[in-house]
Length: 395
Image: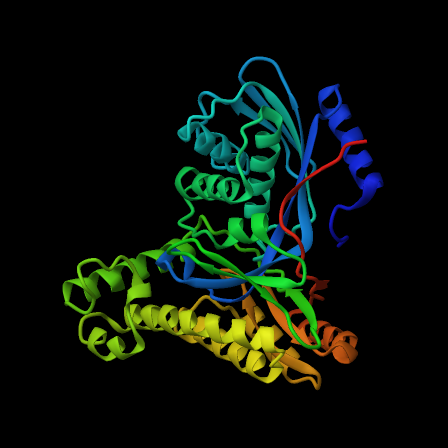
């Protein structure tokens, strides 16, 4: 797969595609990247801590004004769709992510006129690299520029989150849109999903190579498993609150401590206890990982990745055989630092930190070992922590 949309030639190609689709030139262009999460999985919707980086794979959105109140959308990969900006209605398809942004802007009092959007993406769908957030953030940036709304990057991330969460119906947290909108090259972001504070975590020391392997198992967040995990966490918290383990002011599993787990075990079934244990332990791993990354302490980074993978596999039960094998294959190689699934799980990708001199060998061993077991060769990408969403100049 190619990397990020970059340079005037790529923008010119997209502008020509826009003209072919709509018969006129684009007026604005925006890019929004996908993200990889170092640690802090399934904590965001429980008001916890996360540690993502934006990546050098992005979605490009070009836009121009149009007649009436209709929004026409041409996706390079998914085809054409449209709707009335004054009456977005869920269609159960990819266009809902665009409709959700318009709906969220309207909720804030921003009424849009007619427009045309062209969308191209280099973020693989269903891979756990947040193609949906890249789409929503890219659309939000483009519409903000096109209609002069004057929203900043944080506000546009919240618009994209609101659209995906409340309109599309994915019970997601702010991790993905914040990483896409606010990312910084060479850094991770420590995001507190309760107060929405963001701290840049500069990667210190000899920065290892970041490999991401795609299991080939496509994730579909709107189906089943993700929603069940959200519901499990809410049920565990409700039991903790009813049982007096947290004060009345508490609002999420973020408020529980590891020492509360023994008492919680007497209040909930084992499955709910495991879900809570993952969230509580994962929050602790985020701050330890941030400190280790800043210090260049790769031994601790590797240990934390392994602990996070074990928790996602055993307590949260969102790993699958393909993800487990990718981690096992990489971690068996000299030069590997640590591995875990990245994203919500149920398929998608694994993250592998590897010393630079061993990266090619580790990638090849991952591919050959996986192919021997599952009969297909996984894509393995080298990714870099990159800048977040931005407007681009049109030629």
